[in-house]
Image (cartoon, rainbow, N blue to C red; front, side, top):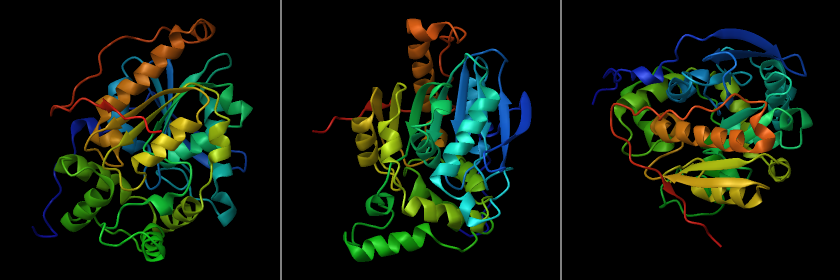
Length: 340
């Protein structure tokens, strides 16, 4: 296949609908965050935090499955999408990510109400980093942590083939991959294949690979590099242990960036775990690879907290509508086996 072979057409569900509102939220250090809202005002609230090198566009398949009957808030992490990059290195840290989530919740979740917060990859790390923030806890009804980990990311990376045996060389090479300063350049057949190998399951359709590539390649190389430095030394275990809200975890069985071992560690550390789900054959990009299952888990958590007597009053009733199916049938997700 030529490197100039055009990408598959982007699936319709990978395009965001027209937002109901777009505004800028200012974080604690003055950083400006692009925030988009979808769905009817007054509906149950869902807040989405995307991962490293992504943007609000990454959540499109999930937004399209929820926006009919949820008020869905998605924001661009600093330096991603339409949120400007930090001016100095101080703007890149897990504390800043927690500040940003707290600011977004304060701006979009009215007093007396709470949201289901879903974080993918670095977005999940954001939720864990904010685990000790009263301003976050007061506005969070439940969490869904997707394809994420609390620390030791480089040690657990599985991007390199098994032939590169565990040890110092493997960690060194993984670190070089993670912290590459090279711009990704235009999307080509070769770059799509590389992205699929590193971040998605082997059965992922070409159009969904193309949708992910379009998002990831839009991230500036400088921003990608600086956030990679944060991820390299990530440790949000303390915040994870302080999360009080009901929390579900989703993993991909073929995730090379945050393998399922991370999901097990998260579930074991949670004060109120509400499910650990592995999506068979799925890589790191579950919201694009398996959006029906991710949306269904968000709905499940929303229904769970709405049914609790202490949580029912602030939220509107959670609709019981079925999760729309994608054009191609998606295999049912299976629960992950518990480990000792």
